[in-house]
Image (tube, rainbow, N blue to C red; front, side, top):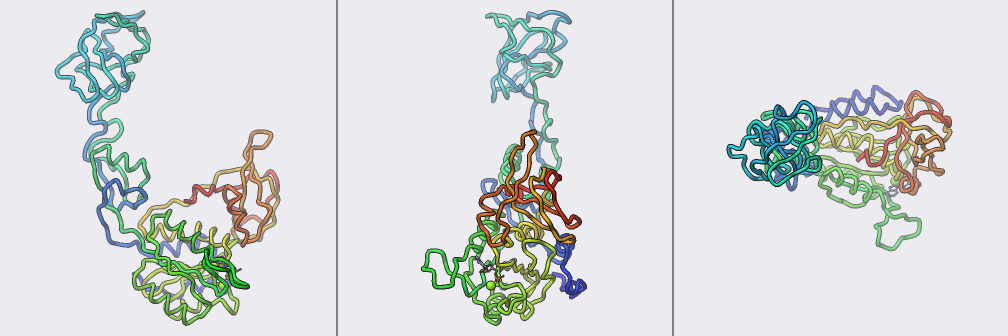
Length: 417
Ligand code: AMP
Ligand code: MG
């Protein structure tokens, strides 16, 4: 892994734009190198380590797309209907075995191989059958209702590219060309801590002045959705040397260390100093709201990401900073999430130079257009502002206000995951 330099501090005390942080992530961190071969039954969400080429054409042979009658288009009358004698029958899984469609109609079923010379299939609903013949209506184009060999995938074509995170439909495609396993990168092992003297474990009594730790479950759920293996390492107290010890230990057996809390500039925020004691920071303040303090660094060659404490800030910074980091480490090619354009139903003042995310719900307005309604509560600690909304409105660096009727970018929560 490349040695980190200190040039990130070229930003001085200023906040780093999110896009600059993403460039640093791409430059400073490398994907895990180890690969393994997994059966398709366990391939969903895994990241392809290599291009997968198709060992065969798909479909492997020309076949009927419907239940019906295969014919040679040349045998059809130029005008009016055509009566052809019925000869032969091929079902899916059967063989056309020398059958020809010359001058006749062959009974075929969906998926059946086509007889020789057949180039068109009539749907059974469209024809009038008699015991010995079929009467075919006029107007069907040549090539109708059949599937050509290789029309889906050509033999040797790139079926799925390296860096793709497998989706259920990708698994189906690999199975359709006869593969039973694929080469993937090793799953990421992520060490997860919460930090804060005020935190208590859900299920335990709540001491005076304490709150339950919700960030760890938020983050472990998000990480698992991403396909990472999570080591839940509990709650760390607000103590610099204790933090440093635990971070250094976690760096021995993980690909990423993730914490929340303790990264602001308060007297009880020791995470940044702990990272500097056992590793190096790459950046620690971003021009993003909610979420400004986000520390990213390296501890003994292992990437570290320290998220803020407030749950909404955790959610937003995970989505826009940790997710690209996870993608980079897992070797995944991840396009930035594409915002949908929707109409704003709210007004909002923001600081130029900073990217802000508002939690919004979509509704259909009277003219049929989709508009975004901002959650009434803005606080970065208001968890219900996440549970009661549909996604995030992305308000870019260069704007200073949003007015009702403005077109804004909307990211559904489902698209971030
Ligand atoms: P901090 O950045 O540590 O000052 O935390 C900011 C706010 O987030 C404080 O109100 C913390 O109590 C809260 N917070 C920190 N960690 C957690 C957590 N794991 N779960 C819920 N709230 C937290
Ligand atoms: Mg704290």
